[in-house]
Length: 454
Image (cartoon, rainbow, N blue to C red; front, side):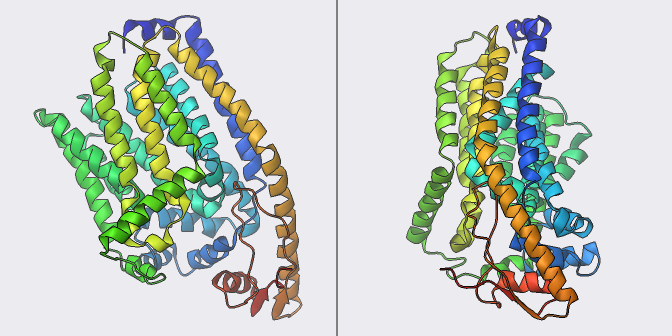
């Protein structure tokens, strides 16, 4: 970073930029927390609550490893939460998860080599608001849904922390805690979710090549990469992965033309669900190319290489899904979108913060975005509250039915279409459907269903 940014941070504009960034994050978080408190439990949560209570936490996690997924860390966190928080109180978890998304933005901002906290705060505020607006249609499944929020945000936080650590190593500085901490963080990030493997492998190898002639950074880079590979290997070897794959046809297919078409379909669906992210990323790249600075730390070629590295990691994040393409959902593209935004920020931020008013401008953009967040969630939150009220009524009816000795219950339909920021799945007409069975088991009933839709 050059002296202009340092002078900004020390001038009267520096504190102003910091307060604007804080206001942007606080304003957006207030809106998201209010929305989270209105989120009803989803049918998946019934199944996960039942699974979490099977024996001890370790036994429940091991059962998931052998029967469903190799994400030991993420599953343990999810089950620990569901063992403590029952479904009627699950909205409290949904209200906390947006803060974890903000923490992800803060750690991601640490990967850009900023030397002053005011710069990092402004970048984090912009990244946070951009993620909320850009992935609006995916937030219901990746943030506000308690199960999905834990499954996606805990690994995202670990990935962002790992990227910040590797950026530090690439700059010639050892990670806090040394090589062993780099290895441990790599294990956690590698095991947390398979969608992060691309960033871990591509960035890890690139940093290792970059510092190959520096003994201390090389050991740390190698430890971070080795840990990620070890954690990923534990995930990939889980018997549950193969059991889960049998739920759909054409899993583990080697039909390359078909897989190519499936990959294109998945990328298209992700961009269709969150078109603001690629558009915003493109605008950031144009802005970053237009700003000129003589600073050696912000040369165009260096920034372009870092951005290209992250873009490659972004598009590779969907490759693990090709093992089971029929199980793809647009929410699987969250890491693609986050890494694309990170690539654009890595390209545009260094020259911006090197200008006299760059950090102030970034904070102002973040604040303006937070105002848009408030407007965008107004209607969503009102609908969520209606859904939550009906879910509470349904929950009371099922508890009363179980207490009175009823065995089979037919519930009225919710008749409210959820916005994309609410993950709500209506029960089926067939009481033997998987989610109907979970709801019935949770309430101690033989069968639960809804009447046919008119």
